[in-house]
Amino acid sequence: MGKVVLVTGAARQLGGRFVRRVQCEPGVDRVIAVDAVAPTHELGDAEFVRADIRQSALARILAEHAVDTVVHLDVSGKALGAGGRTAIKETNVIGTM
Image (tube, rainbow, N blue to C red; front, side, top):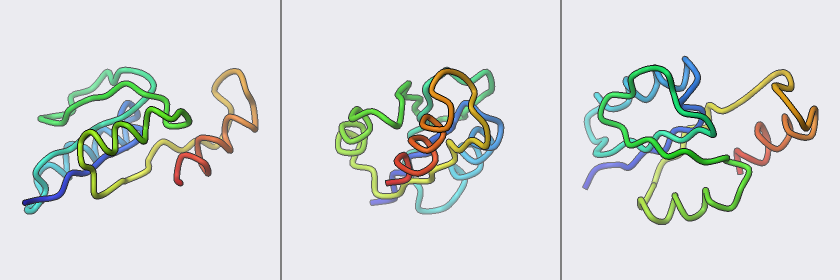
């Protein structure tokens, strides 16, 4: 059985490109693309799940899809809205855990 890869930050350009690329890798059966907002670009055959990686829903998604590989690309260098530095830390650091 091949790998099930979960990619965070799929709505961003880098995340979307990685999602499309990793699907072509031998040994990858499924790709789960996760982001808090819907992507505006194509994700190929990946399954998109709208979720905030800072919330407990991520644990459910990991278990439900039997994910064995996580690629964390939902990172930010500046605050994009409410929450400021705390939101950046939660996404960049806590989201990696």
